[in-house]
Image 1 (cartoon, one colour):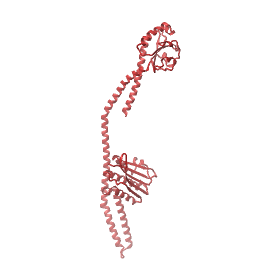
Image 2 (image 1 turned 180 degrees about the vertical axis):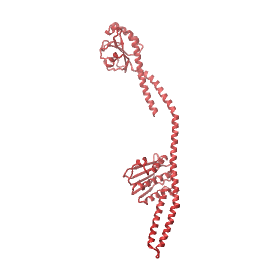
Image 3 (image 1 turned 90 degrees about the vertical axis):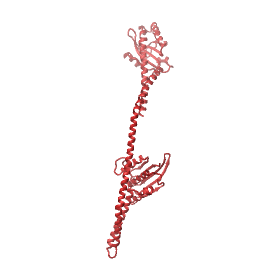
Image 4 (image 1 turned 60 degrees about the vertical axis):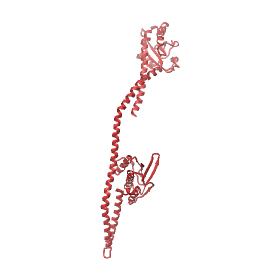
Length: 421
């Protein structure tokens, strides 16, 4: 785009430069006429419009006009009187000179401009199209200054400008093409580096998720085989001790305390098992997304949040990475409901959508909690939202969309759209 913009600007600049050079060429040609034709034929009595002086100038001018494209020649005195023209009807006519014309008498130079054909002194040039007017001072033998003007069709300027423009434009475009050719290898190399960096970033994100999953699996295994089993055995032991303590010969108060301890142990076991589901969902591989989402909802219900799970499509068409992504997003969203939302109700919905872009598995997680500032959740380094930012990047790398609709005091609604293969 930058090269195209430079090319366009360069072409227009070349056009303007060519037009200016063409006007300069016309001015140089008029200057040459003044020195080679007009100045040698000037006589002092031309100022008084002496017939012989006018005739001598007319002979010199007409010989030249027959071999040129000039349309009109005029000689003016300082007071605006036309003392000579190849159009006889202008002889002796007096018109007011404008400031630019008068300035030439004070500062001798050659000037060129588009002629104003609406002026009365230019009435005989009308009907021939746009005209280029070039003027400069000339001097009679005794030093009297006169204003010398030539009029030529502006088409001559257009033709000359076109010739120059093609040359300028050709140089500009060829230079830009050469520059672009030099940039291509650099651009290709940069593109390769960018793609390599993108692949490395995606691989790093996948490694983060894999490492997290592996760590969760290890922790879940240790908890299940260690603490949960020990607590379960302790609960049975305490329950048996409570039954023995309630015998008539024992202390009934001790029996009640032991029963309460056993109940507390069983509640702790239930909480640990819910935690195991959060850490590593065995049902994701064995029972599918529907059961895994139910397990997540059950762990949230233990803290008093009414969670409704609606599964219209169990995501069986997704590959393993897709199912894992859906579960991870649902897990992270529900954990945020438990930790931050202060919600009473939540909905987890899994559906299938189809549009012109293809088919999608859509996960919606919504709650009626306090909501939050989405910029802090996804962009700012807010505590507790790092997992969602990682999942957002992972979803983007996998071609999925992770959308958020929330505001303070308005609840929260997450939507994940995963394309089907």
